Amino acid sequence: MSGLCREVITLQLGHYSNFVGTHWWNLQDASLSYDPETPLGEIQNDVVFREGQTLGGHVTYTPRLIAMDLKGSLRTLRQEGSLYDPGKDTSAVTWEGSLMMHKESPPAKNSFLEDLDKLDKGEILAEADFSCSSQPQRSAASLSVDTVNSRLAQVQKGYRLEGNVKVWSDFLRIHLHPRTISVIHQYNHDGEAHRLEAFGQGEALLQGAVLEDLEDKLHFFVEECDYLQGFQVLCDMADGFAGLGSKVTEMLLDSYSGRGILTWGLAPVSHPNSTPVKDFYHLLNCTLATAHLSSHSSFFCPLTLRGGLGRRPPSPTAFPHLNYDPSLWYHSSSVLALALDALTLPYRLRNNSAPMWQVADTLAVSGRKVVAAYGAVPFPMMHGSSLPDALSACTDALPWKPLSACSEPGDGRCYAQWATLKGFEGQRLISALTPGTKPPSPLHSLHSGEDVLASYIRSFYPTSPLALRLVSTPSKLTPPFPQIFPRSLDDQGFLQSQPPALGSPASVVSSVPVLTSLQSGPVLGSWLSELHRGASTFDIRRVAPSFLSQGPEMADYEEALEQLRLLSRCYRDDSGGVMRSSSEEDDDD
Figure 1 (tube, rainbow, N blue to C red):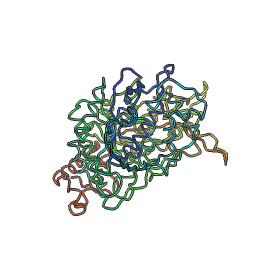
Figure 2 (figure 1 turned 90 degrees about the vertical axis):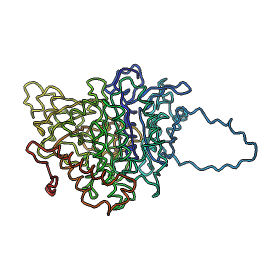
Figure 3 (figure 1 turned 45 degrees about the horizontal axis):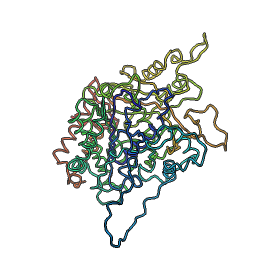
Figure 4 (figure 1 turned 135 degrees about the vertical axis):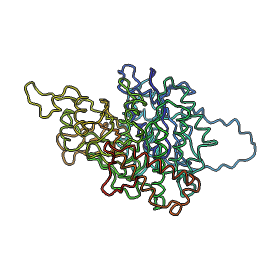
């Protein structure tokens, strides 16, 4: 896995961010290959993974990751992991008197985690006859990743974990480095007491032991990088982690100037046991997160399947070829992880990669550091057809849906755009018409996939600068990725030409193509203005006085709102106006 590359360190701040991050790392793990005879793939895995060695001499391959969460959020996962566990040492026990031991039963593991334990112990080896590779798997044992995936599929064809996932570690496939996880013990994950609910609580955390622990972990991962290009930060927006993320990104900006900081603000569709007061807190946290995280990052992109970030948002984002439950974090985070897998591809490619600073400079022009994401998950491509055929079927509307609670611009105005198509493996990028045949559309007459996709997107955004990447490697879905796909898709995630027969078993989708777009455009001015107005409508000192009890000060809060208002003005179009919804009042001036 060695080789020259531009490394990226990932930070996951908050429980929902760790949900999305767990699915994202599972997707990366599923694409790893340790076979020296296998040709190098399109994705440079060393960008986000690091190679090491256990105390027993086993080669490890773990994420270059720092994950922060609250007390009680790990359940069956040990904070230090199990890669470097030398075993229990009882030599220090010198008491010769009688002992009374109280043993608490550990949380029960679901069927997927039980099978992973059996795999590590070699117990699954006896259940099926598989060849064994000498290369590492799950960063510790001696089985190839392909063998692991085959065995998990053999042992249990489908893991239905919808009722068994309580925390993100309940579906984590890979081993983590002992320096990855940081647990914040001042606040609880479960229960009503000592919850990290307000922006100011998170801001106040980054000092003392929490700061020292983060700096120690950062130094460890940074110092082993040869060509660090930057940091990708996944941060919860709707709770107190928004404040913690603000301080973390500010520290990264001060300590590692010149490196890219691409921040993805995560918000679930709904929160369990929410109340009107908590919903107001969520709005305030999202508002302050947008103002602060955007100022400290190369760009800031909210990622959510909510219809909006207000207290009464429209319906969650619906995808024509997904059957997911928006209320389940296990489901919604898997959709966002699939999109993030494509959104982050430009700076993870082996060839023709674009470093973080280039991606950010393309989009964040003239102070417009907030960008919006859109995705077609999965991209609707018929099995055996071509890219021109697929795009020609979407001439009335783009196939992607909003991933940032931000509407699609209706008039094609966009300052900059970065599009990525991932996973068309085995399909044709250009038309295969016989000579003399009239092309059914202008797209069918083009001679490269890049030209086909660029021509299609420019038909909707005729004057917008466009950068794009096409990658044939699909997002591989391995257990326990939720099977949220309709029967109309085949096992590779492509549309079937004929509907499956009634009563026939549904295909287990093992990979999907995905089309994503990152955009900066006038529509973000409207979105930012609505966010500002939603937080400014009420007197926070009367409606939610406890929000300010641990900071920020009222003056700091008002300054952040003013910063957000000015940020929205950066998105004014050339005519001097901001794109607005029909019900929005022009109250910026």
